[in-house]
Image (cartoon, rainbow, N blue to C red; front, side, top):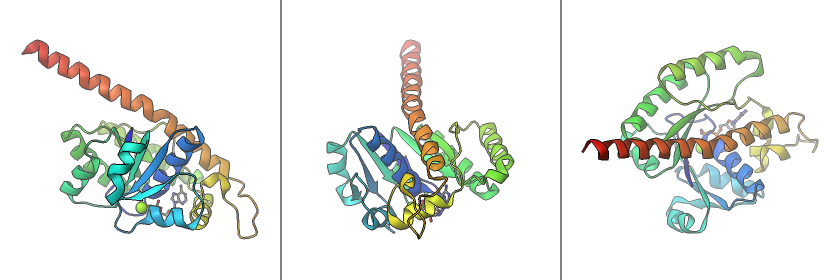
Length: 223
Ligand SMILES: Nc1ncnc2c1ncn2[C@@H]1O[C@H](COP(=O)(O)OP(=O)(O)O)[C@@H](O)[C@H]1O
Ligand SMILES: [Mg+2]
């Protein structure tokens, strides 16, 4: 299974999403790795800081990763270059596009999704960094995205300082601790939100390939 996490904006949790999807699948016994396709090498830097139980490869080792792993997650860099984005998404079973509920992030996501639609690339939007006091803004963003026909994951990723703490120590969020080594009280809320996202992905992939098969059967019949 090939998953690409990408978007036009920086700071929308692409790397965080890649790390956590990989962590969830690893915890379920899957052979998973990350390919860091960002020139800033943020996923590699995240991994070096701590002790993640799965490998993170530079993009130069992507071929090796594709042969040896059951799930390969590509962490993309923020880009507005259409060719670069198409190249990044090409061959993916699913492209995950994280977006915050902010208007500009939503607009860029709609733009990006139309590019993937034209390429018939399977994609879904993940609403991230949702402030628990501003659920309404997230619901409005979801409605706007759905109006444009986008698939939106059935769970938001909450805005939690536990994610920052996890990043600082190079761990998954369920291991987040504060400076005094005390477990973050909301770490499991963050973890379970990514568990829910990971569980929705296989269904999204099989639905897409079923639709593709049906449409190619239709065109065979009408030929
Ligand atoms: N759900 C979240 N809540 C709070 N902070 C988050 C969340 N997701 C990511 N972050 C933080 O936001 C910053 C940017 O995230 P990152 O994954 O590096 O974004 P990108 O890869 O899109 O540039 C990081 O410091 C990360 O720890
Ligand atoms: Mg990144």
